[in-house]
Image 1: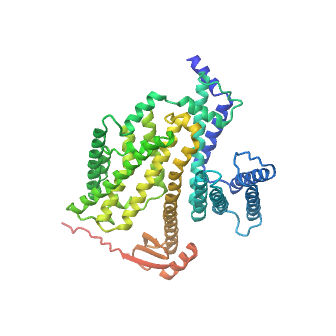
Image 2: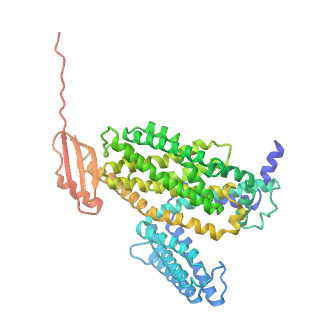
Image 3: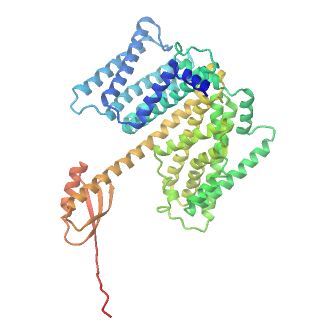
Length: 535
Protein backbone atom coordinates (compact mmCIF):
# COMPACT_ATOMS: atom_id res chain seq x y z
CA UNK A 1 0.00 0.00 0.00
CA UNK A 2 2.82 2.40 0.92
CA UNK A 3 4.66 1.55 -2.31
CA UNK A 4 1.55 2.26 -4.39
CA UNK A 5 1.10 5.59 -2.64
CA UNK A 6 4.73 6.56 -3.31
CA UNK A 7 4.38 5.63 -6.98
CA UNK A 8 1.20 7.70 -7.27
CA UNK A 9 2.91 10.70 -5.67
CA UNK A 10 5.83 10.31 -8.09
CA UNK A 11 3.44 10.08 -11.02
CA UNK A 12 1.62 13.26 -10.07
CA UNK A 13 4.69 15.31 -9.16
CA UNK A 14 6.16 15.72 -12.66
CA UNK A 15 5.65 18.72 -14.99
CA UNK A 16 3.34 16.75 -17.32
CA UNK A 17 0.95 16.03 -14.45
CA UNK A 18 1.08 19.68 -13.44
CA UNK A 19 0.05 20.69 -16.94
CA UNK A 20 -2.68 18.08 -16.82
CA UNK A 21 -4.06 19.53 -13.59
CA UNK A 22 -4.00 23.02 -15.11
CA UNK A 23 -5.89 21.85 -18.20
CA UNK A 24 -8.34 19.92 -16.04
CA UNK A 25 -9.04 22.90 -13.77
CA UNK A 26 -9.37 25.32 -16.70
CA UNK A 27 -11.79 23.03 -18.53
CA UNK A 28 -13.82 22.43 -15.38
CA UNK A 29 -14.06 26.16 -14.69
CA UNK A 30 -15.35 26.76 -18.22
CA UNK A 31 -17.98 24.04 -17.79
CA UNK A 32 -19.07 25.17 -14.33
CA UNK A 33 -18.89 28.89 -15.08
CA UNK A 34 -19.59 29.43 -18.80
CA UNK A 35 -20.10 33.19 -18.48
CA UNK A 36 -16.70 34.60 -19.36
CA UNK A 37 -15.56 38.19 -19.16
CA UNK A 38 -15.63 40.08 -22.44
CA UNK A 39 -12.13 41.40 -21.84
CA UNK A 40 -10.71 37.93 -21.16
CA UNK A 41 -12.07 36.58 -24.43
CA UNK A 42 -11.00 39.75 -26.23
CA UNK A 43 -7.46 39.36 -24.90
CA UNK A 44 -7.24 35.78 -26.13
CA UNK A 45 -8.62 36.71 -29.55
CA UNK A 46 -6.29 39.68 -29.96
CA UNK A 47 -3.32 37.50 -29.00
CA UNK A 48 -4.22 34.83 -31.57
CA UNK A 49 -5.03 37.19 -34.44
CA UNK A 50 -2.04 39.39 -33.68
CA UNK A 51 0.23 36.36 -33.52
CA UNK A 52 -0.96 35.16 -36.93
CA UNK A 53 -0.36 38.63 -38.36
CA UNK A 54 3.21 38.68 -37.03
CA UNK A 55 3.85 35.21 -38.47
CA UNK A 56 2.52 36.34 -41.86
CA UNK A 57 4.72 39.46 -41.85
CA UNK A 58 7.76 37.42 -40.82
CA UNK A 59 7.17 35.02 -43.72
CA UNK A 60 6.75 37.97 -46.10
CA UNK A 61 10.09 39.38 -44.99
CA UNK A 62 12.20 36.23 -44.59
CA UNK A 63 10.46 33.50 -46.60
CA UNK A 64 10.35 31.26 -43.52
CA UNK A 65 7.02 30.23 -42.03
CA UNK A 66 7.12 28.92 -38.47
CA UNK A 67 3.93 26.89 -39.05
CA UNK A 68 5.38 25.15 -42.06
CA UNK A 69 3.06 26.82 -44.56
CA UNK A 70 4.08 28.29 -47.87
CA UNK A 71 2.62 30.22 -50.75
CA UNK A 72 3.19 33.61 -52.26
CA UNK A 73 4.64 36.22 -49.93
CA UNK A 74 2.36 39.02 -51.06
CA UNK A 75 -0.67 36.96 -50.08
CA UNK A 76 0.87 36.38 -46.63
CA UNK A 77 1.49 40.13 -46.38
CA UNK A 78 -2.14 40.82 -47.28
CA UNK A 79 -3.32 38.40 -44.59
CA UNK A 80 -0.99 40.11 -42.11
CA UNK A 81 -2.52 43.49 -42.94
CA UNK A 82 -5.97 41.95 -42.58
CA UNK A 83 -5.00 40.66 -39.14
CA UNK A 84 -3.67 44.02 -37.97
CA UNK A 85 -6.79 45.77 -39.28
CA UNK A 86 -8.95 43.26 -37.42
CA UNK A 87 -7.02 43.84 -34.19
CA UNK A 88 -7.34 47.62 -34.55
CA UNK A 89 -11.07 47.37 -35.28
CA UNK A 90 -11.73 45.08 -32.31
CA UNK A 91 -9.84 47.43 -29.98
CA UNK A 92 -11.79 50.41 -31.34
CA UNK A 93 -15.16 48.70 -30.88
CA UNK A 94 -14.20 47.60 -27.36
CA UNK A 95 -12.91 51.01 -26.23
CA UNK A 96 -14.64 53.69 -28.29
CA UNK A 97 -17.60 51.87 -29.84
CA UNK A 98 -20.96 53.38 -28.97
CA UNK A 99 -22.77 50.03 -28.78
CA UNK A 100 -20.11 48.30 -26.71
CA UNK A 101 -18.46 44.97 -27.45
CA UNK A 102 -20.58 41.96 -26.54
CA UNK A 103 -19.35 38.40 -26.82
CA UNK A 104 -21.82 37.72 -29.62
CA UNK A 105 -20.53 40.72 -31.58
CA UNK A 106 -16.95 39.61 -30.90
CA UNK A 107 -17.69 36.14 -32.27
CA UNK A 108 -19.31 37.64 -35.36
CA UNK A 109 -16.32 39.90 -36.03
CA UNK A 110 -13.74 37.18 -35.47
CA UNK A 111 -15.79 34.77 -37.55
CA UNK A 112 -15.78 37.25 -40.41
CA UNK A 113 -11.99 37.42 -40.18
CA UNK A 114 -11.72 33.60 -40.18
CA UNK A 115 -14.15 33.32 -43.08
CA UNK A 116 -12.14 35.79 -45.17
CA UNK A 117 -8.92 33.85 -44.47
CA UNK A 118 -10.73 30.65 -45.46
CA UNK A 119 -11.89 32.19 -48.75
CA UNK A 120 -8.33 33.38 -49.44
CA UNK A 121 -6.99 29.88 -48.74
CA UNK A 122 -9.51 28.31 -51.12
CA UNK A 123 -8.68 30.81 -53.85
CA UNK A 124 -4.90 30.41 -53.50
CA UNK A 125 -5.17 26.60 -53.38
CA UNK A 126 -7.12 26.60 -56.64
CA UNK A 127 -4.70 29.09 -58.24
CA UNK A 128 -1.70 26.90 -57.27
CA UNK A 129 -3.31 23.60 -58.27
CA UNK A 130 -0.58 22.98 -60.85
CA UNK A 131 2.14 23.36 -58.22
CA UNK A 132 0.60 21.33 -55.38
CA UNK A 133 -2.46 19.25 -54.60
CA UNK A 134 -5.20 21.78 -53.74
CA UNK A 135 -7.47 19.33 -51.90
CA UNK A 136 -6.04 19.94 -48.43
CA UNK A 137 -6.16 23.72 -48.80
CA UNK A 138 -9.69 23.65 -50.16
CA UNK A 139 -10.87 21.38 -47.34
CA UNK A 140 -9.27 23.55 -44.64
CA UNK A 141 -10.51 26.75 -46.25
CA UNK A 142 -14.04 25.38 -46.59
CA UNK A 143 -14.11 24.55 -42.87
CA UNK A 144 -12.87 28.06 -41.99
CA UNK A 145 -15.39 29.63 -44.35
CA UNK A 146 -18.18 27.55 -42.83
CA UNK A 147 -17.22 28.65 -39.33
CA UNK A 148 -17.21 32.25 -40.52
CA UNK A 149 -20.72 31.91 -41.92
CA UNK A 150 -21.92 30.28 -38.69
CA UNK A 151 -20.41 33.05 -36.59
CA UNK A 152 -22.27 35.62 -38.66
CA UNK A 153 -25.61 33.79 -38.59
CA UNK A 154 -25.70 32.45 -35.03
CA UNK A 155 -22.90 34.12 -33.01
CA UNK A 156 -24.41 33.44 -29.58
CA UNK A 157 -24.98 29.73 -30.21
CA UNK A 158 -21.56 29.33 -31.82
CA UNK A 159 -19.96 31.02 -28.80
CA UNK A 160 -21.63 28.55 -26.45
CA UNK A 161 -20.53 25.67 -28.68
CA UNK A 162 -16.94 26.93 -28.73
CA UNK A 163 -16.86 27.38 -24.95
CA UNK A 164 -18.26 23.88 -24.42
CA UNK A 165 -15.79 22.42 -26.93
CA UNK A 166 -12.83 24.21 -25.35
CA UNK A 167 -13.83 23.08 -21.88
CA UNK A 168 -14.30 19.48 -23.02
CA UNK A 169 -10.93 19.47 -24.78
CA UNK A 170 -9.29 20.90 -21.67
CA UNK A 171 -10.76 18.20 -19.43
CA UNK A 172 -9.86 15.39 -21.84
CA UNK A 173 -6.33 16.70 -22.38
CA UNK A 174 -5.85 17.06 -18.62
CA UNK A 175 -6.98 13.47 -18.01
CA UNK A 176 -4.70 12.20 -20.80
CA UNK A 177 -1.66 13.99 -19.33
CA UNK A 178 -2.44 12.60 -15.87
CA UNK A 179 -2.80 9.09 -17.32
CA UNK A 180 0.48 9.54 -19.22
CA UNK A 181 2.17 10.52 -15.95
CA UNK A 182 1.02 7.27 -14.36
CA UNK A 183 2.50 5.27 -17.25
CA UNK A 184 5.70 7.33 -17.02
CA UNK A 185 6.02 6.42 -13.33
CA UNK A 186 5.75 2.74 -14.34
CA UNK A 187 8.66 3.06 -16.77
CA UNK A 188 6.57 2.58 -19.93
CA UNK A 189 8.09 5.63 -21.65
CA UNK A 190 11.48 7.32 -21.77
CA UNK A 191 10.16 10.76 -22.73
CA UNK A 192 11.28 13.50 -20.36
CA UNK A 193 8.16 15.27 -19.01
CA UNK A 194 10.19 18.36 -18.13
CA UNK A 195 11.35 18.97 -21.70
CA UNK A 196 8.59 17.47 -23.84
CA UNK A 197 5.89 19.69 -25.25
CA UNK A 198 2.21 18.97 -24.75
CA UNK A 199 1.97 17.79 -28.35
CA UNK A 200 4.86 15.36 -27.86
CA UNK A 201 3.24 14.02 -24.70
CA UNK A 202 -0.04 13.51 -26.53
CA UNK A 203 1.68 11.62 -29.36
CA UNK A 204 3.54 9.50 -26.83
CA UNK A 205 0.24 8.68 -25.11
CA UNK A 206 -1.16 7.50 -28.46
CA UNK A 207 1.90 5.27 -28.88
CA UNK A 208 1.55 3.84 -25.37
CA UNK A 209 -2.20 3.22 -25.80
CA UNK A 210 -1.79 1.28 -29.05
CA UNK A 211 -3.79 -1.94 -28.59
CA UNK A 212 -1.58 -3.85 -31.02
CA UNK A 213 -2.08 -5.54 -34.36
CA UNK A 214 -3.73 -8.69 -32.99
CA UNK A 215 -6.39 -6.91 -30.92
CA UNK A 216 -7.00 -4.44 -33.73
CA UNK A 217 -7.59 -7.30 -36.17
CA UNK A 218 -9.95 -9.01 -33.69
CA UNK A 219 -11.99 -5.83 -33.23
CA UNK A 220 -12.01 -5.21 -36.98
CA UNK A 221 -13.54 -8.63 -37.50
CA UNK A 222 -16.55 -7.53 -35.41
CA UNK A 223 -16.92 -4.12 -37.11
CA UNK A 224 -16.64 -5.02 -40.80
CA UNK A 225 -18.64 -7.45 -42.90
CA UNK A 226 -15.83 -9.41 -44.51
CA UNK A 227 -15.04 -13.01 -45.30
CA UNK A 228 -15.26 -15.58 -43.89
CA UNK A 229 -18.98 -15.65 -43.19
CA UNK A 230 -19.78 -12.53 -45.20
CA UNK A 231 -23.25 -13.68 -46.27
CA UNK A 232 -24.21 -14.78 -42.75
CA UNK A 233 -23.07 -11.50 -41.24
CA UNK A 234 -24.98 -9.45 -43.80
CA UNK A 235 -28.16 -11.52 -43.52
CA UNK A 236 -28.15 -11.31 -39.73
CA UNK A 237 -27.59 -7.57 -39.81
CA UNK A 238 -30.42 -6.89 -42.26
CA UNK A 239 -32.89 -9.10 -40.40
CA UNK A 240 -32.18 -7.39 -37.09
CA UNK A 241 -32.33 -3.94 -38.69
CA UNK A 242 -35.76 -4.53 -40.25
CA UNK A 243 -37.12 -6.02 -37.03
CA UNK A 244 -35.87 -3.05 -35.00
CA UNK A 245 -37.33 -0.57 -37.49
CA UNK A 246 -40.67 -2.39 -37.44
CA UNK A 247 -40.80 -2.29 -33.65
CA UNK A 248 -39.74 1.37 -33.60
CA UNK A 249 -42.37 2.29 -36.22
CA UNK A 250 -45.19 0.65 -34.29
CA UNK A 251 -43.88 2.22 -31.08
CA UNK A 252 -43.98 5.69 -32.64
CA UNK A 253 -47.48 5.07 -34.00
CA UNK A 254 -48.61 3.99 -30.53
CA UNK A 255 -46.72 6.89 -28.90
CA UNK A 256 -45.03 4.44 -26.54
CA UNK A 257 -41.65 5.36 -25.11
CA UNK A 258 -41.24 1.95 -23.48
CA UNK A 259 -41.63 0.12 -26.80
CA UNK A 260 -39.22 2.54 -28.51
CA UNK A 261 -36.60 1.62 -25.92
CA UNK A 262 -37.36 -2.04 -26.51
CA UNK A 263 -36.77 -1.61 -30.23
CA UNK A 264 -33.27 -0.38 -29.51
CA UNK A 265 -32.28 -3.64 -27.87
CA UNK A 266 -32.23 -5.37 -31.26
CA UNK A 267 -31.03 -2.49 -33.46
CA UNK A 268 -27.66 -3.23 -35.16
CA UNK A 269 -26.79 0.23 -36.52
CA UNK A 270 -23.85 0.63 -34.17
CA UNK A 271 -21.64 -1.75 -36.15
CA UNK A 272 -21.22 0.05 -39.52
CA UNK A 273 -21.21 3.55 -37.99
CA UNK A 274 -18.49 2.80 -35.44
CA UNK A 275 -16.74 0.80 -38.16
CA UNK A 276 -16.76 3.89 -40.38
CA UNK A 277 -15.11 5.91 -37.60
CA UNK A 278 -12.47 3.21 -37.15
CA UNK A 279 -11.76 3.14 -40.88
CA UNK A 280 -11.38 6.92 -41.04
CA UNK A 281 -8.75 7.13 -38.28
CA UNK A 282 -6.81 4.15 -39.62
CA UNK A 283 -6.80 5.19 -43.27
CA UNK A 284 -8.75 2.14 -44.44
CA UNK A 285 -10.36 3.59 -47.54
CA UNK A 286 -12.14 0.46 -48.75
CA UNK A 287 -13.60 -0.29 -45.34
CA UNK A 288 -14.72 3.33 -44.95
CA UNK A 289 -16.57 3.21 -48.28
CA UNK A 290 -18.22 -0.14 -47.46
CA UNK A 291 -19.31 1.07 -44.01
CA UNK A 292 -20.72 4.33 -45.42
CA UNK A 293 -22.64 2.42 -48.10
CA UNK A 294 -23.95 0.03 -45.44
CA UNK A 295 -25.26 2.93 -43.36
CA UNK A 296 -26.79 4.64 -46.40
CA UNK A 297 -28.51 1.47 -47.58
CA UNK A 298 -29.73 0.69 -44.07
CA UNK A 299 -31.15 4.19 -43.63
CA UNK A 300 -32.92 4.06 -47.00
CA UNK A 301 -34.47 0.66 -46.32
CA UNK A 302 -35.50 1.79 -42.83
CA UNK A 303 -37.34 4.80 -44.23
CA UNK A 304 -39.10 2.73 -46.90
CA UNK A 305 -40.10 0.06 -44.37
CA UNK A 306 -41.49 2.57 -41.88
CA UNK A 307 -43.33 4.32 -44.73
CA UNK A 308 -44.97 1.06 -45.81
CA UNK A 309 -45.87 0.00 -42.27
CA UNK A 310 -47.39 3.41 -41.52
CA UNK A 311 -49.53 3.26 -44.66
CA UNK A 312 -50.91 -0.16 -43.75
CA UNK A 313 -51.19 0.32 -39.99
CA UNK A 314 -54.82 0.68 -38.83
CA UNK A 315 -53.94 3.69 -36.65
CA UNK A 316 -55.00 7.30 -37.05
CA UNK A 317 -51.79 9.27 -36.49
CA UNK A 318 -52.15 12.46 -34.48
CA UNK A 319 -48.99 14.24 -35.58
CA UNK A 320 -49.56 17.32 -33.41
CA UNK A 321 -50.00 15.38 -30.16
CA UNK A 322 -47.76 12.35 -30.72
CA UNK A 323 -44.77 13.00 -28.47
CA UNK A 324 -42.57 10.47 -30.28
CA UNK A 325 -42.99 12.51 -33.48
CA UNK A 326 -43.00 16.07 -32.15
CA UNK A 327 -39.81 15.45 -30.16
CA UNK A 328 -37.90 14.45 -33.31
CA UNK A 329 -38.96 16.91 -36.01
CA UNK A 330 -37.28 20.03 -34.59
CA UNK A 331 -33.72 19.01 -33.70
CA UNK A 332 -31.49 21.36 -31.74
CA UNK A 333 -27.87 21.43 -30.64
CA UNK A 334 -28.89 19.38 -27.59
CA UNK A 335 -29.55 16.46 -29.95
CA UNK A 336 -26.03 16.77 -31.33
CA UNK A 337 -24.60 16.72 -27.81
CA UNK A 338 -26.59 13.54 -27.10
CA UNK A 339 -25.19 11.94 -30.25
CA UNK A 340 -21.63 12.96 -29.34
CA UNK A 341 -22.01 11.23 -25.98
CA UNK A 342 -23.55 8.16 -27.62
CA UNK A 343 -20.72 7.94 -30.17
CA UNK A 344 -18.11 8.25 -27.44
CA UNK A 345 -19.79 5.50 -25.43
CA UNK A 346 -20.00 3.22 -28.45
CA UNK A 347 -16.36 3.65 -29.40
CA UNK A 348 -15.12 3.26 -25.83
CA UNK A 349 -17.18 0.10 -25.35
CA UNK A 350 -15.78 -1.30 -28.59
CA UNK A 351 -12.16 -0.93 -27.45
CA UNK A 352 -12.63 -1.60 -23.72
CA UNK A 353 -13.65 -5.20 -23.15
CA UNK A 354 -14.83 -4.42 -19.60
CA UNK A 355 -17.80 -2.49 -20.99
CA UNK A 356 -20.68 -4.29 -22.66
CA UNK A 357 -20.90 -3.21 -26.30
CA UNK A 358 -24.62 -3.99 -26.23
CA UNK A 359 -25.26 -1.08 -23.86
CA UNK A 360 -23.40 1.31 -26.13
CA UNK A 361 -25.24 -0.13 -29.11
CA UNK A 362 -28.54 0.77 -27.48
CA UNK A 363 -27.30 4.32 -26.88
CA UNK A 364 -26.42 4.72 -30.57
CA UNK A 365 -29.61 3.04 -31.77
CA UNK A 366 -31.72 5.42 -29.68
CA UNK A 367 -30.15 8.29 -31.59
CA UNK A 368 -30.69 6.76 -35.06
CA UNK A 369 -33.54 4.29 -35.49
CA UNK A 370 -36.49 6.35 -34.12
CA UNK A 371 -35.68 9.38 -36.36
CA UNK A 372 -35.66 7.08 -39.41
CA UNK A 373 -39.03 5.66 -38.37
CA UNK A 374 -40.43 9.18 -37.97
CA UNK A 375 -39.14 10.09 -41.46
CA UNK A 376 -41.11 7.25 -43.05
CA UNK A 377 -44.22 7.88 -40.96
CA UNK A 378 -44.18 11.60 -41.78
CA UNK A 379 -43.81 10.93 -45.49
CA UNK A 380 -46.75 8.50 -45.30
CA UNK A 381 -48.88 11.28 -43.81
CA UNK A 382 -47.81 13.83 -46.41
CA UNK A 383 -45.95 15.94 -43.84
CA UNK A 384 -42.78 16.70 -45.75
CA UNK A 385 -41.51 19.35 -43.33
CA UNK A 386 -41.72 16.93 -40.39
CA UNK A 387 -39.97 14.26 -42.44
CA UNK A 388 -37.13 16.64 -43.34
CA UNK A 389 -36.79 17.67 -39.70
CA UNK A 390 -36.48 14.03 -38.59
CA UNK A 391 -34.02 13.38 -41.43
CA UNK A 392 -31.92 16.33 -40.23
CA UNK A 393 -31.95 14.76 -36.76
CA UNK A 394 -30.69 11.47 -38.22
CA UNK A 395 -27.89 13.21 -40.14
CA UNK A 396 -26.99 15.19 -37.02
CA UNK A 397 -26.72 12.05 -34.94
CA UNK A 398 -24.83 10.15 -37.64
CA UNK A 399 -22.16 12.82 -38.16
CA UNK A 400 -21.78 13.51 -34.42
CA UNK A 401 -21.39 9.80 -33.63
CA UNK A 402 -18.73 9.35 -36.32
CA UNK A 403 -16.73 12.37 -35.14
CA UNK A 404 -16.94 11.43 -31.46
CA UNK A 405 -16.07 7.79 -32.12
CA UNK A 406 -13.08 8.82 -34.25
CA UNK A 407 -11.65 10.95 -31.43
CA UNK A 408 -12.16 8.17 -28.89
CA UNK A 409 -10.48 5.64 -31.18
CA UNK A 410 -7.43 7.91 -31.45
CA UNK A 411 -7.14 8.31 -27.68
CA UNK A 412 -7.82 4.67 -26.78
CA UNK A 413 -5.33 3.07 -29.15
CA UNK A 414 -7.53 1.60 -31.88
CA UNK A 415 -6.08 4.03 -34.42
CA UNK A 416 -2.69 2.97 -35.73
CA UNK A 417 0.08 5.33 -34.59
CA UNK A 418 1.83 4.83 -37.93
CA UNK A 419 -1.24 6.04 -39.85
CA UNK A 420 -1.67 9.06 -37.57
CA UNK A 421 1.98 10.00 -37.93
CA UNK A 422 2.72 9.21 -41.59
CA UNK A 423 -0.70 9.64 -43.24
CA UNK A 424 -1.94 12.80 -41.61
CA UNK A 425 -2.83 14.44 -44.93
CA UNK A 426 -4.84 11.40 -46.02
CA UNK A 427 -6.67 11.28 -42.68
CA UNK A 428 -7.37 15.00 -42.91
CA UNK A 429 -8.85 14.62 -46.37
CA UNK A 430 -11.05 11.69 -45.35
CA UNK A 431 -12.23 13.41 -42.18
CA UNK A 432 -12.75 16.88 -43.67
CA UNK A 433 -16.08 15.98 -45.39
CA UNK A 434 -17.57 14.95 -42.05
CA UNK A 435 -16.36 18.13 -40.34
CA UNK A 436 -17.74 20.21 -43.22
CA UNK A 437 -21.05 18.32 -43.07
CA UNK A 438 -21.16 18.89 -39.32
CA UNK A 439 -20.75 22.64 -39.90
CA UNK A 440 -23.51 22.62 -42.52
CA UNK A 441 -25.81 20.75 -40.14
CA UNK A 442 -24.95 23.06 -37.26
CA UNK A 443 -26.47 26.07 -39.04
CA UNK A 444 -30.13 24.94 -38.93
CA UNK A 445 -29.62 23.34 -35.52
CA UNK A 446 -28.30 26.56 -34.01
CA UNK A 447 -30.96 28.63 -35.72
CA UNK A 448 -33.64 26.35 -34.26
CA UNK A 449 -32.01 26.45 -30.83
CA UNK A 450 -31.78 30.24 -30.85
CA UNK A 451 -35.41 30.49 -32.01
CA UNK A 452 -36.60 28.18 -29.23
CA UNK A 453 -34.47 29.98 -26.63
CA UNK A 454 -35.71 33.39 -27.77
CA UNK A 455 -39.32 32.19 -27.67
CA UNK A 456 -38.91 30.78 -24.17
CA UNK A 457 -37.31 34.04 -23.05
CA UNK A 458 -40.25 36.00 -24.49
CA UNK A 459 -42.74 33.67 -22.80
CA UNK A 460 -41.10 34.12 -19.39
CA UNK A 461 -40.91 37.88 -19.81
CA UNK A 462 -44.54 38.04 -20.99
CA UNK A 463 -45.71 35.97 -18.03
CA UNK A 464 -43.97 38.33 -15.62
CA UNK A 465 -45.53 41.35 -17.35
CA UNK A 466 -48.98 39.73 -17.25
CA UNK A 467 -48.70 39.17 -13.50
CA UNK A 468 -47.65 42.77 -12.99
CA UNK A 469 -50.55 43.90 -15.20
CA UNK A 470 -53.06 42.00 -13.06
CA UNK A 471 -51.58 43.29 -9.81
CA UNK A 472 -51.11 41.58 -6.47
CA UNK A 473 -54.69 42.13 -5.32
CA UNK A 474 -56.36 40.74 -8.43
CA UNK A 475 -58.59 37.68 -8.25
CA UNK A 476 -57.32 36.61 -11.67
CA UNK A 477 -54.37 34.29 -12.29
CA UNK A 478 -52.37 33.69 -15.46
CA UNK A 479 -53.12 30.25 -16.90
CA UNK A 480 -50.97 30.20 -20.04
CA UNK A 481 -48.83 32.40 -22.28
CA UNK A 482 -48.04 31.77 -25.96
CA UNK A 483 -45.77 33.97 -28.07
CA UNK A 484 -45.55 33.64 -31.83
CA UNK A 485 -43.60 36.43 -33.47
CA UNK A 486 -45.62 39.59 -32.70
CA UNK A 487 -48.75 37.76 -31.47
CA UNK A 488 -49.10 37.14 -27.74
CA UNK A 489 -51.93 34.97 -26.42
CA UNK A 490 -52.72 35.33 -22.72
CA UNK A 491 -55.22 33.17 -20.88
CA UNK A 492 -56.38 34.18 -17.40
CA UNK A 493 -59.01 32.83 -15.06
CA UNK A 494 -60.79 34.34 -12.11
CA UNK A 495 -63.66 36.64 -11.28
CA UNK A 496 -64.31 40.33 -11.09
CA UNK A 497 -62.93 43.08 -13.30
CA UNK A 498 -59.51 42.79 -14.90
CA UNK A 499 -57.40 45.69 -16.22
CA UNK A 500 -57.80 46.76 -19.87
CA UNK A 501 -56.06 44.57 -22.46
CA UNK A 502 -54.64 47.72 -24.07
CA UNK A 503 -52.56 48.32 -20.94
CA UNK A 504 -51.14 44.80 -21.21
CA UNK A 505 -50.26 45.36 -24.89
CA UNK A 506 -48.42 48.58 -23.99
CA UNK A 507 -46.48 46.90 -21.18
CA UNK A 508 -45.51 43.98 -23.44
CA UNK A 509 -44.36 46.41 -26.13
CA UNK A 510 -42.00 48.07 -23.67
CA UNK A 511 -40.71 44.71 -22.37
CA UNK A 512 -40.25 42.92 -25.72
CA UNK A 513 -39.08 46.04 -27.59
CA UNK A 514 -41.54 45.55 -30.45
CA UNK A 515 -45.18 46.10 -31.29
CA UNK A 516 -47.37 43.17 -30.34
CA UNK A 517 -50.98 42.10 -30.74
CA UNK A 518 -52.47 40.66 -27.57
CA UNK A 519 -55.23 38.05 -27.60
CA UNK A 520 -56.75 37.88 -24.13
CA UNK A 521 -58.87 34.89 -23.09
CA UNK A 522 -60.78 35.14 -19.83
CA UNK A 523 -62.18 32.06 -18.11
CA UNK A 524 -64.84 32.93 -15.54
CA UNK A 525 -64.73 30.82 -12.42
CA UNK A 526 -68.04 29.92 -10.75
CA UNK A 527 -67.74 28.84 -7.12
CA UNK A 528 -70.75 27.25 -5.41
CA UNK A 529 -70.84 26.67 -1.67
CA UNK A 530 -73.56 24.31 -0.45
CA UNK A 531 -74.38 23.30 3.11
CA UNK A 532 -76.18 20.10 3.94
CA UNK A 533 -79.75 20.57 5.35
CA UNK A 534 -80.39 19.74 9.01
CA UNK A 535 -81.73 16.31 9.82
